Length: 477
Ligand SMILES: Cc1cc2nc3c(=O)[nH]c(=O)nc-3n(C[C@H](O)[C@H](O)[C@H](O)COP(=O)(O)OP(=O)(O)OC[C@H]3O[C@@H](n4cnc5c(N)ncnc54)[C@H](O)[C@@H]3O)c2cc1C
Image (cartoon, rainbow, N blue to C red; front, side, top):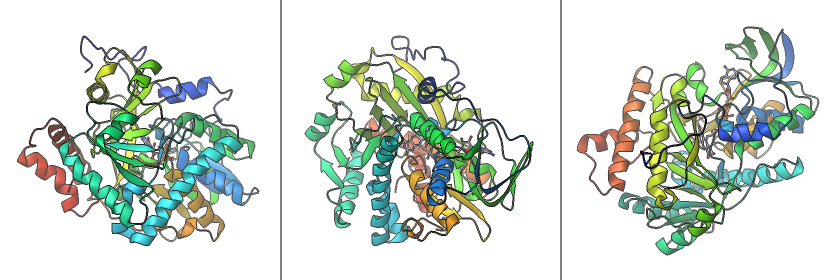
């Protein structure tokens, strides 16, 4: 608990988490010798204009250059590349075997397995990309451990493992006894769990900044500090000029709630991460030396991983839903405190290890908990959205699929089930963000009560189940 005895100790930035760059991004910028790319200053032309300099936008630009090095590609980013969630996330490049239920419901078993295999290939490809381009993004394939922290999660775990086995993927996801969980990472909160083979940790900001460097070397034009106010067909309009292009790509993630093309597909939720001081000895003491990504089973997921210098980055557990992307996504001290509380609860043996940093960002929640990517309507505008907090590996696949659609390449990527899928829509505003905020708090209250061995109240339980009752693949059954 961050109380008087265990202060948060956010060195230097205590009152304003996220007003500064995330710790990842500051660390990455400290190790590079790059200046910001100049903002767009006049009208320009391109074959493809990409809005958003996160993983979706930059992977799309990368695969466009792979398919046709002569294409003129312009990326427009309102901040700097990686200033958004791509440089702020937990760095979990994780498989989709835990998403089988949703994938099978939406696309059937064979297509679901195909999608999972494609994500696995993307995780491998991230490691290969770093090696090929000499990017030290701390890529480490230690797998993903799910830890049960409440009785209510035992059945979720069992069902998840059974589904993978029935889909012929028993090797990908298997159950762990409490002792096996403890051997990988010992916490008094863990009762048992499961292990997914597909999972790698990365330093996300080093990855996105490395990708940016590769694109600049390939002649992609990047304008940072350039906000696109609208698309006019496939022309991107900014206050300083327009980029006329044959094709446009919207890679704006949670900012999609402000774009008419995307807003009914998304709800924006915040997620926060806290980072400890280096404590490699303590990490060894709890046996967490395999580099596993770890999370619990909550809808308001808690996720944690280690760093090469022996820190723990611990995310989730709080957060709120909002109508627009505002300061609540980066400056919410309550969310930082809730996240820190989750960490102290799970790792009491780290009670005297200070938490040195905290930051947050927006997540683009879709009604299916899964992203879709492809073409918007009949025009030349493409998009990727709805990652729901799981975009590090999927954005790589989205970039390939969009680049292949634009260049007309007939590849496996364009035949994936989430390409040009039609996701269900959320209700219109103001119902959407108001409802999402209420339901989000109810989910957190329900899961916190369950974890503490208490019965959640009737109203809280009912509210937390609302999304499922509306046919969405979100939250508890
Ligand atoms: C705290 C946190 C932890 C997370 N942890 C994980 C994790 O461990 N694993 C995982 O897989 N996923 C995680 N995610 C989700 C993951 O970060 C995203 O799914 C992924 O980064 C999406 O990439 P993107 O390029 O679509 O979006 P972003 O990285 O958000 O990029 C979109 C970019 O568009 C820019 N933009 C928006 N509007 C405009 C405009 N009008 N004009 C110009 N530019 C614009 C933004 O500034 C931003 O840089 C996490 C997210 C958060 C917030």
